[in-house]
Each structure stands twice: as structure tokens, then as C-alpha cells.
Image (cartoon, rainbow, N blue to C red; front, side, top):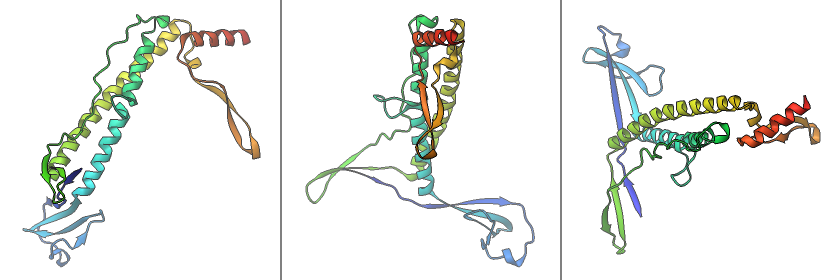
Length: 227
């Protein structure tokens, strides 16, 4: 059993701006709303101040969700079940290395699959009254937010890097197909909208998508014979 103890607190962010005499409406601190959710304006130490309340548990939840989304988008579910841009790049490099489109049969090594932002907890073990041993881990809330913010920054950079590599690989693959007399459009699925039951239109597949050079050649020959 594992429990995570986080002390949720609310912080006040004070942003100062120059000011001199203010109206009586602002004499009482932080009673005037700015129109932005959670913000109030007031007078403090002869300065007009903006006070904003931020609930750290909400910030933590948003950060955690963003990190998980980026991780899944880039790397997929897990190391044993990869996906995302990382796996798309791996498959593209494999296609590009195919000797039938000019490759040498040896795709370049993939970048390491990573799990960014994973919590490596240090557990303290204790015995409860019912004699069961449980593990407890504690982490300061600010430390968790800092760690997730760093993970988000790293993942954002990796996303941009993998996306550029994938776009470059796909462009090279399309070029290789053309150089070997194949039409890149033949890699795409083909179909048409037809009249279905109850007046609804449905999509009828004529052919599926493919990356196989031999199938691409067959499609090319068939298209040329039909012309």
C-alpha cells in the first residue's frame, strides 16, 4: 500500500506597480477585483498592488496532466508497448532503409525510449496497529511542482526534436519513392462516399493504405493500365 502525503497550500502572488494617491475605494487592501479570475487590487505600502490567489493543488493537477499527455504523445504507453512520434519515426526509418527504395537495409539506431518525469520514490516503512507493513513516501508540494515543470520543459523540447526528425524522414521517404518510379499518393487509402441506408452517406473503401514497395508497384501498374 502506498500513500502520498502532500500539504496543499494557497500562495499569494503580489505584483507591484507604481502609484501615488488613490481613491478611497482602494484604501482598504485588496477589495477591488481586476476582472481576472482570482485577482484583486488594493493599496499596500503606498503602492497599488495586484493580489492573485493560486491554488497549488490545481496547478499540480494541470501540470501532471500536461506531462502525461506529452509523454504519451511522444513515446506511447510504455517501453514494451511504444507509440507516439517515437514509434512513427522508428517505422519511417525502417521503410527508408528498405533496399527496394534505395536503402541499405540497416535503419539507424533509434534514440533511447524514455519516461520523463517518473517519480522515483524513497519509501519509509512502518507497521500499523494491525501488524501490516506499509510504505509511506512524502514529497514537498513545491518540489513536486518544480519537478513536473522541468519534466514538461524537457518533453516539450523532445517533442519538437522528434517532430522535426519525423518530418525529415517522411520527406526523404517520399523522395525515395519518386526516385524509384513510385507514386507517394499510392501509399494512401482510397475510397468514396456512397449512398447508404436511411439516406445517410457511408465511406466505401476501395483500397487500404500501404507502405509496401511491391504493393505500390502493383498499384502503379494498375493505374497505368487503366489510363
